[in-house]
Length: 212
Length: 100
Image 1 (cartoon, each protein chain N blue to C red):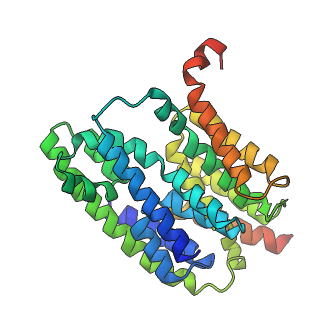
Image 2 (tube, rainbow over the protein chains, first blue to last red):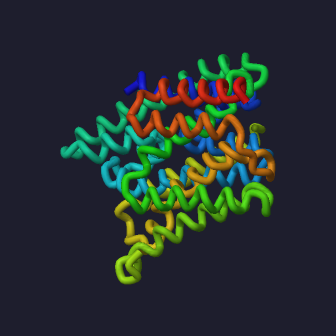
């Protein structure tokens, strides 16, 4: 688990730093944002010269899934506020998965802390190593590294596409963003992609009736 | 990316996580909140991948990156390990750039 998170951290750190974020800020981003997809997504928008507002919004909208995950994981955490204040930051895909899959509540809590801390530390250490590697690359276009960000991001999206509807939402996001990019300043096409995704969720109940 | 941007995303992300954890079991959230958020991240991520593959500022460009992302997607679909996916995508981009 530590190796997987650490390995991903190295790659993400290298990509983010190679795209022009300082090594210190790259590491700080892992400490604070703690979400590979959000970190890469925000970096992608920044690299495409999106406004700071668009960059922040992209990061937050991607990490909004941790709000949804928190709704389930919170039921398995001790009710004391101190635990929740700390436990919230340790919320990641692996820690949520283990907390939700272990039957016994005490065991689940223990597993959540253990996995949460291991993954968090591995992620931060991994990105630190990657940040130093990435900072040594002068121009990301050399060796085709400018494609590393979308490819890596694709690897983060793949596990989230768990149904045909999710796949349809992702493809709609692609089409909407590409279609609007020449027309609107970056940020707005992505916001539109986001809105299209939201409609996929909202249309779910009525979807059966409308035969979608 | 600047520190202020990073801190803003970090603070917001923490609040999102905390809100979820705190709201758990407290009261019933209206179902549309979850529905709204369910497919938003995948759609947005799809958009960011696409812009990263063919976007250049506000222009759309079909260049070596698209080849790399395509090859990376194929490697991913074949369940290749992550490093191989990345190497295939990056390698294909470099190769396409040399050949073009």
